[in-house]
Amino acid sequence: QTNLEEHYTFKKNTNAPGFSSTIDNVKLQYQACQGANNKNNDLEAFVEQLVNDGKLSTTEQDIFKTRVVGNNNCPIAIENLYDAKGFESGHNIDDTKWRFVSGEEFDDWYPIMNHLLVKEMVEALEVPIVRRVCPSCVDSHKDIYYRRLTTMPASFNLLDTLKNNWVDTDNLLNVDFSLHSTYLDAFLGINGWTFCNYNDSNIGFPRDCGPDGRVNNQWNSYTRGGGNAYFHAFLLPADSDFETELEFPTFPMFLGTDYASQQGTRSSGSAITHFGNNDYLTYASANFGPSGTTKGLLFNYAKGNGGGRVEIRLGAGTSGRLIAELHPAQTAGWSSYITAYVDIEDDVEGLQDITIVAKDQGGVLNLAWFELSDFSDRDELHLRVLATEYSDQSGGRFETVHSSLGNLGYFDNNDYVTYTHLNFGPAGTTNNIDISFAKSNGVGGFVEVLLNGVNGIKIGEFHPPNTGGWNQFQIGNVPIDSIDGVHDLTFVAKDQNGVFNMESFQLA
Image 1 (tube, one colour):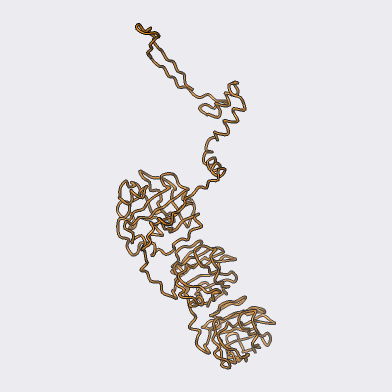
Image 2 (spheres, one colour):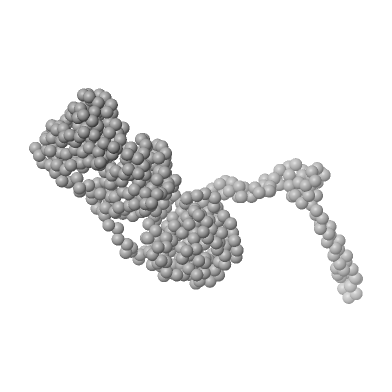
């Protein structure tokens, strides 16, 4: 409330009709806005008091309430108004001017996962600038431009620095980079930001950097929550002439820790550990070659328990196209690694990102490495195949206590194991399978031999005799129907538990 008092002097005009006036003084008093229920300086309470005093009607009060939403309710009121009018908050990317690199809540855009490619693209720009747009950030951080000032060392991972780990190594404000609020400022190198901090684990760009001082919680992170930049995108100026000079050989091998992004895992050396339900690992730029070149993956893993499965998908994230699935058998322990031959179900070509997803339980496996393969090592006719080199299974285990080569054990009724891409040669070339096996529980149980999977055609049957011990391996010959060409081969245990231990087999 205000009290206003004004003093005037009026004089009659001598040469004209009327009066002239001057203001002598003005007194202005500010007073507290007295509201109902002793709530002073509260607009809503003041209107309530006016209603109580009969100076406003309740109808007028209701109209007031449709316009004034109350303390701390402005953000939600603004969002509701946007929704009511059909607006949607966010940022439309003009792909004629900007190239999407990475982001959160920009689900219609595919990210660049290869940090070497991002680095190369930045270095190829006339002025090396990375832009972050952030609809969920405060005004000062809705649009930020990172301009690189120094050459990035080979060891510097710009993509991870921006996404998850904003560090000061090779990344100091106004030494290695500058920050700006407009693209023009960044291009010209003017009006740079003055404050930055760094080195908080798993916190990405720009931590608490600000135009004139510290601004908290406007950072992004792809591995932890807490920052306000949960809706953002990193962009590069579009360059239609850019062509990468990176080489992507076919049949690449990836160590477990060579991932571009991950969720939920840990590592020990170069191996991935603690890989549990819905955890994932994404590997960038795997070259599958021309159509039909890559037949599958060699997958080196260890597992100290049973159960679980692994999905292998194309793209980043957990919803890309499923191309393979592995049901990993238990090995001799979490540090006892074997190599599975994982057949891909669809023909895949070209450069692809790969995401490996754990399913169904905690502790699905430890991953040492995997490699794209044409399975050319299986092209040899009458090749000896180790039992541990399977492609699919259910129920069995692989152990080393009975054989230094490793063997299939605990092979019980209806358990099965499948081996992929076996060369039977021309018709009449392969008529038998020689199996290195051991058995110590008397006579009983047998093995069905199926072609092309657990639901395939039965081509033979093996009734293993007692060999005198689970580590007493001998060769058993299994006649099979005449088969030609390349096929998968499946062994199915029948009629009892502990049908046999298998060390290896060989087509003959």
